[in-house]
Image 1 (spheres, rainbow, N blue to C red):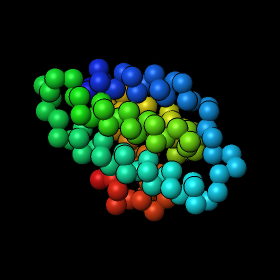
Image 2: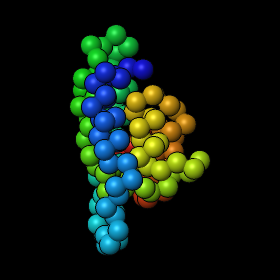
Image 3: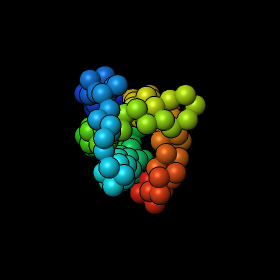
Amino acid sequence: MRGLKAVGPALALVAAVAGCSSDAGASEQQLTDWRENYCRQLGAWQRAHDEESPDAAGGEEAGAIASDVFAAMQPLTDEPVGAGRTLAEATAAAMNSDESEALGLIVAYCGDNGFETLTR
């Protein structure tokens, strides 16, 4: 559970925005832009997370980037990603609990939306 301390504020952000998706009325181009931004931020978090050493002091870099991922996710929180989960639920599980199934769901979400090259 590397970086859990640094991701704590991001978890609070997820709680604040869960169920508050603002994608109603958004154009397809706006949705595409939001999805691309989310996947770009997710890829940055993956790279930082992978580079952390297990004894890193709190995983500050990945934690800071996680906040960016959660902010990018905000307009997409209710998007389904499979296994009965929303993007918000799977993102929180992947980043806060290091859950590999959830990470697989959000990476697949990016791939399904044409942004597989932005994630690893």
